[in-house]
Amino acid sequence: MIRRLNEDGPSLFRAPVTAAPRPRNVQLAKLMLVLLAIVALMAIAMPAFAQSAPAAPTATTTSSSAAPAAKPGVGDAVDRALGQLGGPGAAAASNGAGKAPLSLSLQVLIIMGLLSILPGILLMMTSFTRIIIVLSLLRQALGLQQTPPNQVLVGLALFLSLFVMAPTINQINTQAIQPYSAGQIGGTEMIQRAGQPLHAFMVKQTRMKDLKMFADMAHSGPYANSTDIPYSVLLPAFVTSELKTAFQIGFLIFLPFIVIDLVVATVLMSLGMMMMSPTIISMPFKLLLFVLIDGWAMMMGSLASSFAT
Image (cartoon, rainbow, N blue to C red; front, side):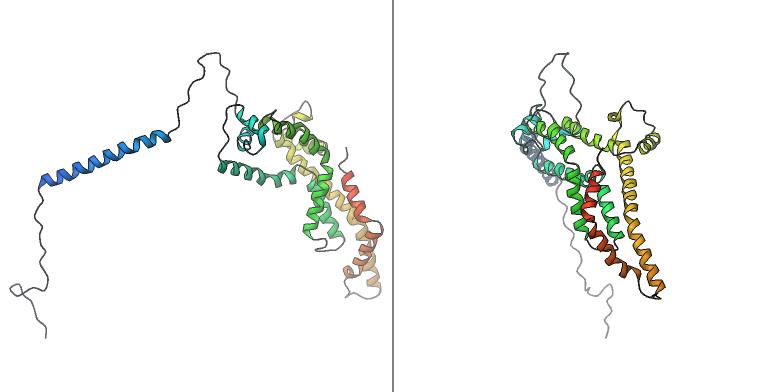
């Protein structure tokens, strides 16, 4: 049974209760209290802001003949980042110009950034590129897939690169690192001095044809001497020359092993053993020939002497 409710009957819903309007004076009083609270908070916070605000720089001299400030170089950030890490010499070099060392977080950021570019410097500005490519081609010529493994080849190329670059590293240590550690030069001058031996090494290993090609593409030159060649032209020309030299050496390495493959394939064909892979038979003869001629010592000596100028 459904009970219909009409307008005259009782209602199932409670009628809303209308609140009595508040006096206008109470609302104004609350608004004034809020404004006073905001003003009080600002008055309390002002001394804290004043203490945390940096002090305004004071002029040390008013003379019009003061020397202009030197332009900041790349090494200034290195000076400030290593000011607390490089000992008293580096600290003196960084703080001598009135520059406070950077915070620890910025020091870590700059040092990690420097470490991130080290692989690029190792690959593109040293003898590592030529050596690792030649060793990889040697492994392919022998018919070996993973022997020696990649870690062994990279380690061998790394230490042979250190052997080849030892004179250049010694020059960098003598001309740049030791004076910077003693506080005699700044970071910008250290970078300039360290780049000179590397620049000379790359120029000696770069073909003039490659240098001319990249200089013409960059609309740069002619240069009075080799020290005037910018890194933007020298680096790609050096890498191109290294790749060409590495592939020339690799071609000469492949020739004797290709002869062994051809001889083995011809013998197997004449015996009717067409289903036998020539690689399986030729690999022991390749290894035997390589061991008999003392191939590893010959390869290391040839690679190291290829950088002699």
